[in-house]
Structure formats: C-alpha cells, structure tokens
Image 1 (cartoon, rainbow, N blue to C red):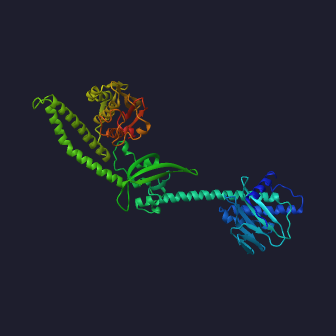
Image 2 (image 1 turned 90 degrees about the vertical axis):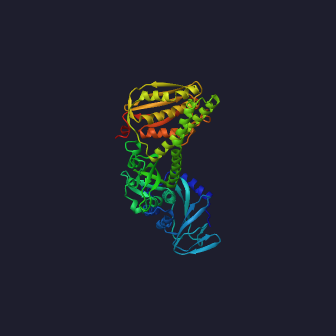
Image 3 (image 1 turned 135 degrees about the vertical axis):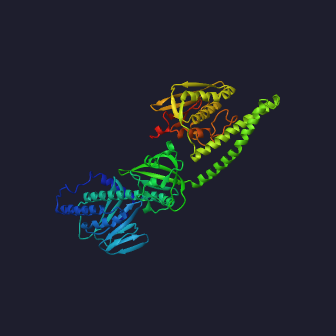
Length: 543
C-alpha cells in the first residue's frame, strides 16, 4: 500500500528538478526497442492530450479524459490527485481496466472496468502483481498534483521518467490554465450578478452611441426589455429640461455620452411605460480586447428632485410675499432716518440705522433666493450687450465703497486688459460684487483686496479677486460653489451672508460659457477667478 502525502510529492519534485531540462519526445533517440516503444506511447498520449486540451477548459471534466489518454501505457488502473490548499491530496478521477481496490475512508470499494470520480485517500493494487507508477503534475515548477497508476503484471516499463516528466508538465500546465479560466469566469459571474442586482441603471454603448448591453434596472427605468434596448441610440432616452440655447447648458446629450467624464449631469429619462424620471448620468470610458466602449451609470433621483422642487417653491413663495413689504419697510426707515418725519434723536437714529441695515440684509437674502430659484428652473435670462471690462471693476469698487471703508479694507483695481466684452453687464457685476464682498469679509483690517482683469487667450478674458486673509483649506474648497455654503473666515459669524453668493456667481458665469474657480493656500489668502468669452457665450460653445 502506498500513501502519497504532500511531503512525498515535494520529494518527487526535488528529484525531478535534478534530472535537468524537459525531455523532448521528438528529438530523444532510443537505444533499446522497449524505449522506442515507450517513445511511441508517449507520442500517442501527447497527441490525445493535445486534442483534449483544445476542446476542454474545465479540469474536472478533463481529468477522466486525461486518464483515458494514458491508454497506450496499458495500465490496470490510474488515478489523478490534486494538491489542495491544506497540503492534502484529493483524488478527483480514476480509470480502471482491471479489478482493483480503492480505499476511501473506512470503506473499501471494489471497482470493475469503467470510471469513478470520488474522494479517496489510498490506492492499493490487488495481489502482488504489477507495480505502482507515480509522476507529479507541474505548473511553473510547482507541484499541483500527481498521477498514480498500477501497471499490469504482464507488462513492464523501462526507465519512463523522461516520458512521464513531459506528461506531468503538460497536464500541469493544462490544469493551471483551467484554474485561471475558472477564476476569470467566477469573477465575471460575480460582476454580472452585481450589475444585474444593482439598483442604478447601467448600460454600455459603442462608438456610434448604440446600446450594446443594459441591466434590469435600466430596462425598468425606460419600460423596455433587454432585446428592445439593444441597438437603440442612447441619446434618444434622455433630454435636458434646463436647456438654454447658446450656453454651456445647451450641450447635447450625445456629446455627454461621447465624452466620458466623472462629472454628473442631471437629465430627464424617457420612460415608455410611465412618467419620465429625473436621473443623474455619469459616463466612463472602457476598453476590452481592443474594443472601445462607454459605460453609463444612471441613478434615479426623481424623489430628491421633487423634494427640492417643493423646498424651492416654498422659498420662492416666501420671498415673493416678503419682497414688497420689505421694500416698503426699508423705504420708511430711510425716510425716518433722514428726518422727513422730524428729528428722531440720536438714540432713535441709531436704532433706525440698525433696523435699516438688517432690512437691507434681508432684502439681499430675498433677491438671492429668487435668483437661485431662477437658476434651478433654468430660467435665468441674459441681457447681452457690450460692456467695458475696466468699467465693471470700477462699478464693483464704487458699489462696495462704504463697505470697505467700514472694514478698513482698501480695494485696488489692476486693469491689464481694457476692452469690451459681450455679456450681461448686471449679472457679471453681481458676480464681481459677490466675490469682492466675500473677500472683504475674510480680509484682516487695513489689508488690500485686488480686482484684476487680464487677457487669458485670443478670445477670452479673466477676472480675479484676491484677498490676503487666512486662505481656505483644500477639503473646504470642494463645496464652495454649492448652495448655502459659508466661506470660512474671522468675520463670517459676525457678518453672515445668505450662503448663495458663490452658487449664484457660478451659475452666472456658466450661463455665459465661462469657468469659475478658486486658488488658495492656508495663510496665503485666496484668489477667486472666472473667465469669459470676449464675444459672448455663443463663441464658447462653438455656435
């Protein structure tokens, strides 16, 4: 009885490594007739294995076929064992042509001619006839298993080590390839399961924008089956309900699908079986086996959009209801402060000034909320006309003169490009005032704030607002242009704004086809900048 442990297999491997390079059946010459016969048998087996390996990719399926391919050696029985992770050998297949015994645990199983796939631990030949043959299976010089066979009594094998060495390497490489194929298939199955069970819609498109594949979530979103989705133009399922002609918001959906980016775009998705959905679309670029395609992730945000719409409507109603009364209150306080109704006295005048200041701040909040509502609804109209870039800086400085005097901050204008641009003067002025007032808020007393305009390209100019305050940390810059975001600074708590200034400024610049950003280092101050096309938003969008 022979037991093959992991230690025994390792010893086999070490012995094998001493024999030198792989034995070449095609060139090695045989010195004895029996060796010629052995070479012929080796060739027959290699031919059989080559045929099997070309058709089978599952080692469990291929194992019994491998043992059958050993038929030229005329073994009484053969078994194939694999080395598992726990360093134990497991028999995965056996081929028997004569009666033998294979012991499995406490049972002794009598076998006749045929095949058997079972877990066994020992193989024993009957009687004392024949001899035991074993050779390791190697994959990249690592032992991954062993073939154990019983030779028939009447047969004898000469020195067969080179033949079985070659077969062991051939079979081991096949097993290694099967294992890799199985791992790849398992990985693909896990990915497919994840995609099919994802709550977000996922689809892929080819270079022409045609849908190649889609998951069940996307099919439910559009109300079509998988077969109905395939071959459709992806852009046909989407439209932008905030379309503004001549601005960057008029970017076609097809362009978004053709130019992958990590940025999310909010669109409407057409559902043939129900109401349209509000969705976020993100498109990524992928390549596989020389093929280029894009993968789109579609997330249903209908509930969130509806909730935001209710909040916007509430703010809008409140703002409209407050606008007229607040205008009247502000006008009345101004008349009283100026003595139209008589001298109120110093103490009363101080109270009136405080009330008027608070009233002005509330009016600004009302205007910002109304502007934000227009932006969200895609209804920010632009009154485009020629205006002086230097004049915009001058008006910004004049508008904030009382503000900077009170804070001790001096506004400096640096005009490096003095020409005219085609833009909405009032909106650009609004953006400049927002950025400059923020800079004054975060500036130390008696420090400057620089307003700069300069050329940034053949058809582009750049405005900048620089302060010399504490600066902004990198993790705080990501959300600066969102709704209700407050700039960090020493005066923020004392002079709270609406938190909508940067959000509105970004929308104004976007609508002009420009870009806006911030450069800052802690302790070095900040520069908020934006670019504008000189000839208007149509140039920025290639119109």
